[in-house]
View 1 (cartoon, protein in one colour):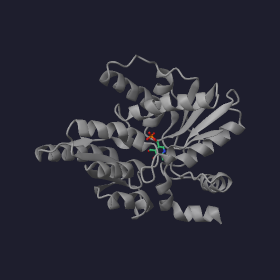
View 2 (cartoon, helix red, strand yellow):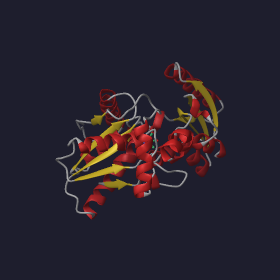
View 3 (cartoon, rainbow, N blue to C red):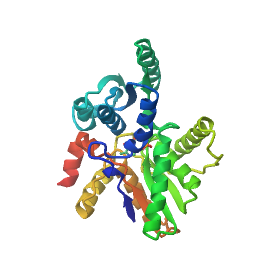
Length: 301
Ligand SMILES: Cc1ncc(COP(=O)(O)O)c(C=O)c1O
C-alpha cells in the first residue's frame, strides 16, 4: 500500500483543495475578480485553503459557513480563516442548501453592484474548473506508477463533494492509466456520489468543448461514511492514533480517517484482491483534528 502525500501540498495549504484552487485562482486573476467567495462547514479545509490562497495572491475572501454544532470554536481551520483575513457569515445547518443559494445570490449581486464582481466558488471547489486539479494529479500519478514499476493499482480517496473523485476518475481515463479509482464517501451514499461525478463530468464536457466524450463509471464505497458528515465512530479515532504511532502519518476524522477505515475493512474482506498495489491519496485535513480534541485524546490514552 502506498500513500500519495497530498497532505504535503503546502503547510497551511495542506490537502487536496490547493490543487483545485490552482486553476480556480488562475481563472479569478485572468478574469479580473478581486474577491473569492466560497462556502463550507465551520471547519472546512476548502474554506481555509481559499482564505490563504486569496491572502497569498492579494485577493479578498469571504466565506459562508455552515454552523454544524460543537465544532464552531475558534480553532483549527476556522482560526486560520480569520488569521488569513477572510470575512465570514454563519448560517444554520437546518435549511442550509436554500439559505446558501440565497446568500450566494445576494453576495454576487452586492459585489457586482460595487463594481468589483466576486468569483463565486461552489462547495469544495468542486466544479468544472476545480476538476482540472485532479485531472493534472492523475497525470502526476501516471509518472509515480511508472517510476515505481507499478503495473496495475487502485487509487483510493475520501470523497466529500466529489471533485477529487471526478478529476481522478476522468484523469485516469483521459491519460489511459492502468488504475481504478475508488472513492470512500464521508457522507451521503454511493448513489449520490456516482450521480454527482457523472453530472460534474457532463458539465465539464459542456464547458470545455475540446474534451473527448467519456462515459465514466465512478466507483464509490459508502460503508465508512459513519453517522453523519463530520461525525466519526470511535473506530476512526482509534485508527488515526494507530496510524500516527505506526507510520507518523496523521489522518483526520472527517475525511481521510473515515476513508482509510473503509479501505482497511475492504482489504480484509478481499475487495482489493485483484490488484497488487493500492495508492491511498492522503487529501490532508490536519487542521480539522483540533475541533475533535476530546475524542482524539480519549483514543490516544
Ligand atoms: C481533507 C479532505 N479530504 C477529502 C476531501 C474530499 O474532497 P472532495 O470535496 O473533492 O470530494 C476534502 C474536501 O472536502 C477534504 O478537506
